[in-house]
Length: 336
Image 1 (cartoon, rainbow, N blue to C red):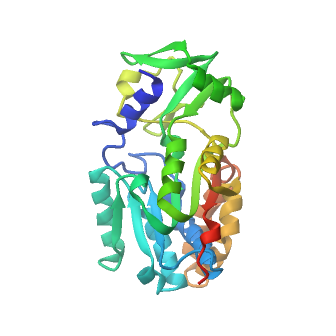
Image 2: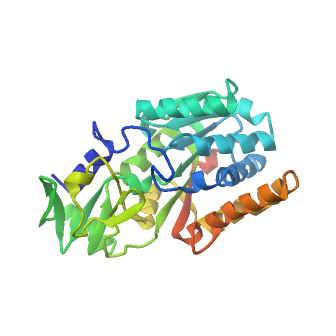
């Protein structure tokens, strides 16, 4: 089988890595921006609130998160929107795209813990099920979890008994690689279908996503395995695919040029591409922190400021992670 099929089974198969809910922390997955600080979600919500104020978003529309883990990000966004305007949590509808039943239940339990019966969540199995007039869609670190093929010297990786072999790549794959100046590295599978389904189901859409990667091909392999907070390059001689299969996380750097082409081909407009630091600052994270400083103790302020430093510092998450945003159907926007 092709490596993309193997990776899909690794992550999403019957016993796949993402089949069950994964904890974040020392005993679980790597820390993410969402788990670092609630101000990450608050700043994205602040940007959404700005769109609402400017009449560029619909207060009767949907706020949807894709790949929500436990639901921290969506809840942090809802909390900030309530702070900005309590009526918004009554007019907006909230949803999560999540196919795994156990993960869904963990999300519902957490949302119940945060908001009781005040917030109702709709679950969709797949983005193709979402059919709405307006949605603000957010995702954190989803494109690095799409399966990918591996290309090297015009050959594509295949898997037999958890061992990588190489065979001649088909003309379509080679044509894509040539058009993107890629000679060696990962080619994500599924971006195009994902973008098309979102475009088909959401008449007017704002989509924001954060991930690690660059807007160009590396012409090198970034694919790696995460195991107990250690990183192992896939082609490291110490890597045992059989031992890690479906037990450890596997990921790669996102080629944002590929993401951009998939969405623009589907009819979206690319609104922005920038580092996570620049995006969060533009969304107002520093202003939110200053508001927080007036309502809390110096110790709590210092703690939150330190967390935000992790999010925006160039040597930490600030430059390594990127934000890309798209819009669709702006001509159909409702003036509120």
